[in-house]
Image 1 (tube, rainbow, N blue to C red):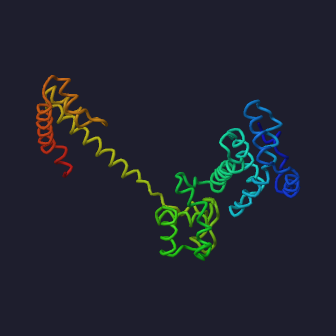
Image 2: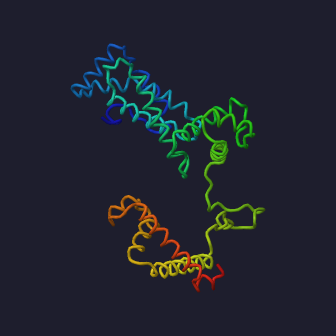
Image 3: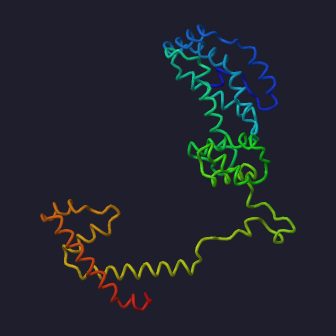
Length: 296
């Protein structure tokens, strides 16, 4: 099942009016007709039946797509994505449940359009959680209800009301509002004459990474600490070293019970050995010449 065979051609924005006029010519199905066609498709994979189911609901797709015009994307693209959602719904529709196809298809259509908007509206990924997606698609409506002006920050009271309404944090509301108001900006965009002289935006961005000297000092400090720990570990007896490593140095430390079974002793004895090994290592580290020289 493909859009090419089941839906009229939608040749971009220029052909939108023609497309909208064409889909109005497809008849609306009665419940009985819809049930019969849906069973023909489900049971016999009758593509003619699927074609009638799809074309009779193209007006629904167009109506839903028109509701997402405020995101600056071509309506023809929104309709095309909605048509894909419609066809997925026809594939999965179960007429035996007694629902109308439109009721079931509406959710698939909206999901397809929303996913397309989220991936196309911004180069930076917008929302990943259900709450963030809900915020993205409802923020403008709630701002209008609160008479909040576009292109400006929300007041603390407005932010809190929206956050409470959509079950997100005020910070998420503020961040999303600024994203929707500002859109994407290129780092290669030239600076205005009055802004830090000539050049591009990326020229004045601060590099928050540590400089080479700081990274070298951190690496050197790590090497020293590892050297001190190795020297301290060398003072332990073999079993002390094994138990200390298993309890303190692994990403997923072994339990007292596991080690007790391994060495054939009690859990309390394992704990005592671990404690003694820790005391030895601590004493050695405190007396280490490297640590003293570093002023630690």
